[in-house]
Image 1 (cartoon, rainbow, N blue to C red):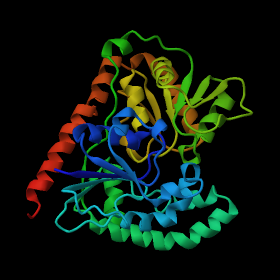
Image 2 (image 1 turned 135 degrees about the horizontal axis):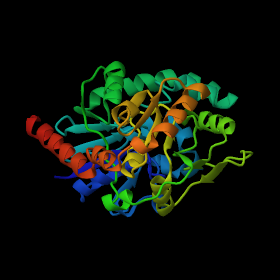
Image 3 (image 1 turned 90 degrees about the horizontal axis):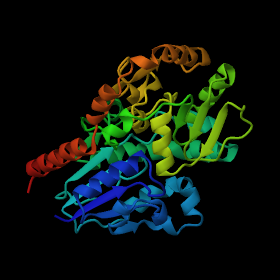
Image 4 (image 1 turned 60 degrees about the vertical axis):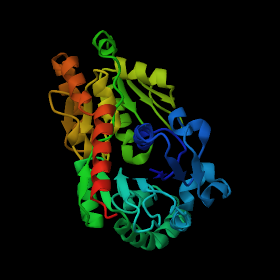
Length: 363
């Protein structure tokens, strides 16, 4: 079969790109289509595939400001001619599913989430944007939402990355979906059993407003405990001495932090959230906000602690509980829990679903 995979943009390696990697391993001869491609920031697994870009790639500053070209992306997707393929797989969290495919070609969408900045986080996005961006985006958003909802009917089968996202797909697109959780990389089990914990807590991930790093900072500013912040985005400045901002870290440093951290702080609401599972796989319990995808991965008293409100008081209460119960978390149980989300499990479920869709599709 000739397979086309549509991914919104390839500019770094985050959760969506890790899922794409696992799909690429299943279909090593598939072609990839994307709006913007920065090869040196993408894994070798993905780079082995032939990658085609839309006209967005050639626009001024696209590598850095690609999201500003969102209003042009529907036109860019619809300009793609995919009639030579036997199967289309779209990977959606930015615009990807809106391609125009002939009716005889099955189109399966793995949905990380309906576009956050158009739906669930629209008002949050406006509040955190500059005045000019707010003006233009608020003017364009209704037509983009209409296009996004309309193109959901160009998809034959939706796969959601969590039950949380499946509910969003039902509410926004009025479509049913199959839930297949994304894969987590598992370290060697013996590595986590003998790793020694240190005294710092860890915030790991892109430093963006909706991830609520501000809540973590304010809480640790008050309690004086050590916090390490690592992930994409600029290094944070003017922090107290007990809080360290590392900015982007290498894969080796990331592994080291996950193994040594006392616990992971996860104060934002995520669609699924692969970082908590990575921490759990490394024997590190998680303190997570009790909303979104964390409810599907953080099991109280097994892999972490949940807190109910995004306030300093609520987060601090969870930290106090963690301080008192650290020795009760069993690394072997945590590893077995994370293993339920392995890459092998993901690929088996994804491949089986693809085969079922193809078998039931009219020929």
